[in-house]
Length: 514
Image (cartoon, rainbow, N blue to C red; front, top):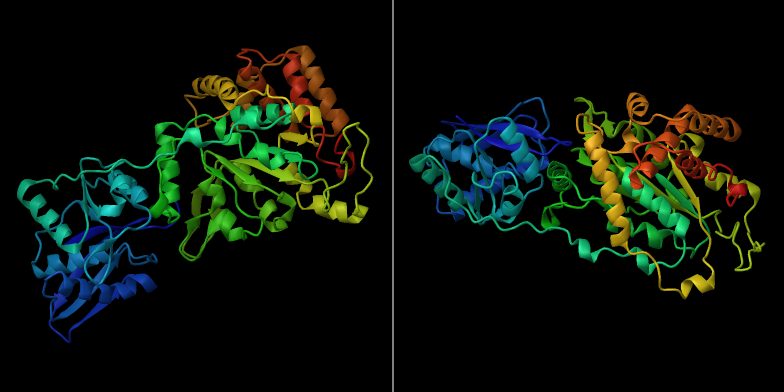
């Protein structure tokens, strides 16, 4: 006899079989199966919860086995399964078959919420589990996938009662599942609040439509961060399955107290002091990092050169593959990381390189030496920059622009983006690709035929700018997105020329404004 439980680990976690055996001997509890700190401590929490819930704890020797035994298990979500397994072995509850139990116990017997509930239910349904018992505070999250097969309980006694009713009626007692909080798209910042920077806005529109990576650089106060933070206002909503996958990753990260169903793509903005583990994921008990929390969304690195070089360079493989593989002694762990990278940087450490006056004259007041500037930009590295399709140099807008009030709203831009995304979804519906930025060379050949003039334009740009083969394909992907925004079936030469224009800057810090 066993109780089915779940232990968060990586992106999918592990389904655990909790077995209890009661035998004669000195009273005590032994836990086997590579139980880590929080799981070993469950022995005392379970004992106190029994007593404070009105149950008699068996005065015998109890052996708890957590299978599979060769996998480390940590976290407090095994408290309730351990308690129920002891009760089942002692005959206090009916046999527990085909039901997954989750929950952390307080000494009083009250259940606390746990992380990874949505991922646990997804894994359970995949394994054929029919019913689920979860803490009441996780009810909204659990109801996403297990609406009619989930009992949300507030304490150990209610969990026991739910199992008794299930044994008598064949189903768990009905539970009112509260609606899960969702994001408010009306709360997004609007494009119309930013005056000027038409080229930067256009680049953000293209990036949002095709999920392309973007680098924006310029002096402080030019509006780099202000506009970047408005990108969520023009991105297309997630599809239902994408929303569940994104929400599951955030639940696994331990944000159960503020979990929301992600109808809108996530927009992550880590501080530049973030560690490699915080960005990439990992830890003793592997958790998603920022690149996984930005899955199907955007990772915005403001003041990007201030991040550790190792952090920036480690983004290259996930950008290419859409996953991050973390090696551990017990085996590699793969976390999804299909994200769009948005980088913002000053032109130099002091920020004044290339700064212009309203009349167009360059302000010659940069305090950085050439070596300092090269060292500042060297953090990006050619390999990372080669994966960034759009590069935009910005400067402070003219004062006359700041006085105007005729800027396009986010709603106007969003309508064009949604049309382009719909075209791409229809184009790639038979593949695993979501956006133009992820097109393989085979898909490029299939969906991006070029005229002779367009081919010559691309070849000339690659030769003159010294671009790589990856850059060649990036130009075509961006041109395909520009054509989609104009609802054009074919890629015109003007689309190619605009895509090339976004590749001209960003490689030489002393030629940042062309």
